[in-house]
Image 1: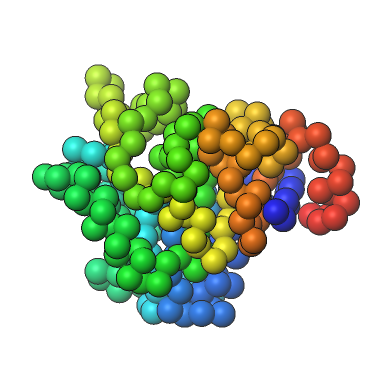
Image 2: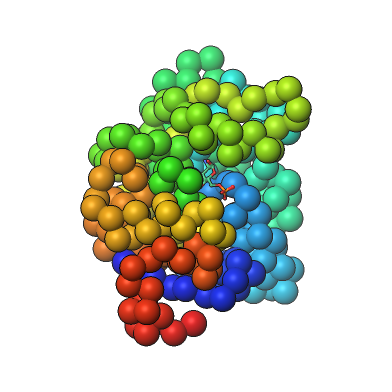
Length: 253
Ligand code: GLP
């Protein structure tokens, strides 16, 4: 794992956006794996700025998002489909139909998960997978004890995840209990992964994922087995790392 620790969240999101732009210029027909959540909002803002400057074109790219809530239609303001349209797709040149998310409102969500997994595989799998990190170490919506070999499927969300994400829902409305998520095996097939975490709240999960044992208890820890994984952190998210000085020494900001 390549551990890059930058001063603050702004530097981290600029760097993450820069990595995606480099991927697109090296391979315009890249298959991107995209993520949602608060951390990614800043990344997408920077990416839109790069696009406006002519430094990132998505015209030849395809994307697959990690996950979607079950039961939310795409036009629901809290669906990830809506999030992606608002925060990224409406502002860039990705071709209509080239940006994929699982269909949260599918009548048969289990069949939808199977279809989605097949679509990712048919696209040749992901070239660059962007990942956030849950407080409990989840990647996508692969909650603790998810099979480290799992593929796209239905997952029941942990209470802590639903609480963390409830800030995006209107008062009185709770995040759904179920989501469709790419599996850990799906994510591990990506040729390159970029995990982004910022803020002190993530410090414990970050330390477990990077320095803890590989375990389904902290699903992101499987990235220790990935051949090309980069973890981008700000100082706050890196604050519980035992080998902090070593990482700073190997990759000075
Ligand atoms: C959600 C998403 C994850 C994301 C996580 C972190 O649970 N399903 O893919 O990594 O949020 O979100 P945030 O960046 O808001 O902390």
